[in-house]
Image (cartoon, rainbow, N blue to C red):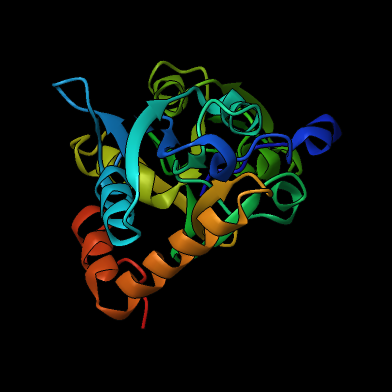
Length: 244
C-alpha cells in the first residue's frame, strides 16, 4: 500500500515516547482520506476497513482506543513524537520505515499498484504520472522515465488526470478500483499491475513492544477465525487476496 519516505532524524527519536509508560487509552492515528481503507463519513467520523478492523482489534486485545486523524505526510513524525500510539492508515511494511518504527504482522496481504487514465493510448513510460507525495508509488515512478507530479492527497492525484495535469495516476489498485467503476467509462485501468510493498500493517514506536504483541495476537486471532478475511472481502471485494 502507501509508503512514506523517512529521514535519519526520525530514527534518533523513535524510542523517546512509549504508549505503555503513560497511556491507558490507545490512540489510533489514521489519514481519513483513503477509501476504502479509511475516510471521514457524513457524521464526521472515521470509517472504512481500518475503522472496523481497528475497533475489532482493540476489543480482542481488551484495549480502550480512540481515533485521531493526521495528514499523511506527517503521520510517522507525529507517531514518533507521541501524538498517537498506532498508525492504521493503509501503510505498507517496508525496510526503510522499519528502521524508524516497528510493525505488526500485515493485516492486508501484499497487493498491486495500477495506472488509471482517461485513454488506453497514454504513454506510461514517458508521460506525466501523478502520485501521492511520499508514497511507494511516487518512489516507483521517480525511478522510471516518466515525469512525476506529486499531490498531498490521493483525491488530487485523480483530479489531475481528469483536468489534464497528468496523463495517468499510479496508486494502489484497491484504492483506484471504485473510482474506475463509478466513472461510467471515463476512467480506465491501463498498463500492467505492479506488485509493491510487503502488505499493510500497524505502525508503532519501537519502544512499544508490549502493545505490538497485543495487536499481533489480535490480528492472528482474526486470521484464524476468518473474521479478517470477511472484512477484506467486504471492503476490497471478493477477488481480493485473503489469508489461508
